[in-house]
Amino acid sequence: MLDAEFKSEERFSKLSIAYENSEEKERVISHVEKIIAKHSITPEVYTTGVSNGKEVLVIEYQDDIARESGAIFEEIIADLGIKKFL
Figure 1 (tube, rainbow, N blue to C red):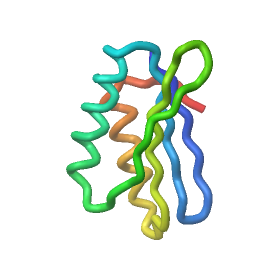
Figure 2: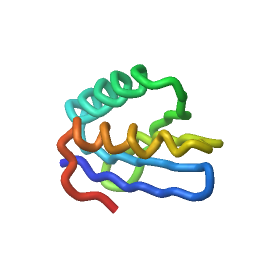
Figure 3: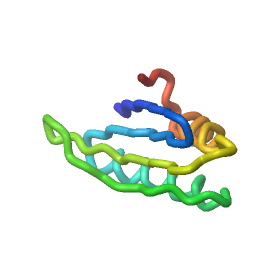
């Protein structure tokens, strides 16, 4: 099951997606890469480990003056079928 968390401040936004296994990881990464490639702004993307063997893919946009990242994050969330996030 995928978990997502969104944070935003002035000109900064971040979407974190947690997954439990390699199948979910491959699915998340492929969907995120496909969607990011369609847009002109480029985020910083990295993976980090959390408790209970889960990992988190983090997508961060810095200096997003036009707030383009919101639409990109909405597209990622919809594409992955995430219904609830923090």
